[in-house]
Image (cartoon, rainbow, N blue to C red; front, side):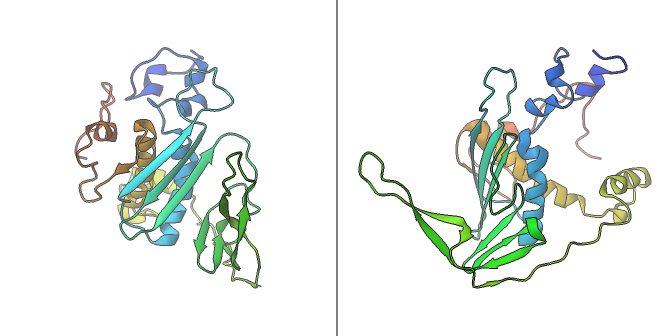
Length: 254
């Protein structure tokens, strides 16, 4: 254990495991005991922005997730280095997310960002919220050996760009960073000073948990937003919480 590191405190409520470099910075992201995979690491930021843009203040009713650990199978790491998830809301809205720590090509000219597809084009958050208007070009894939012709729709790039859509300029950063604002509010206990309601953090983080639970069970799951449970699914419900290691136990009420 490196000098100055309190390994017991570092693990906190997670089950105690002997120290290894793989479980220390930054590798703790790769174990279910201490992390929520890349979905909860960087994916939550994208999902938070998507919820804000779509004004989604409710949980989805269905979730499916798939992925795995590729290119470095000879490891003790547990969480996927590629994961995709699809969330379905009661009104039919679909949210699709892909996260990876592997090298990947850009999509629509962006290595990361959010795309909002509509009947008239798409909006990308990666370029000052630029809108692109046009129809989408069908893309024919080569015939497989069976001779069955497959057709797919390339939703990334419009075939005809009729005209550029509007762009929204970047918003000014707050005078106090979000990190400092959080620390300030922890110290002052003044909820009204928060840059964002704490419930928004719960709603966005819940999407990551739902995706990970679907991934770990290997099934498409049905979720009840009112009770925040999976009806009749004991396996999935068991993953909604965990047992905390003493003395790092969170109280039921604060």
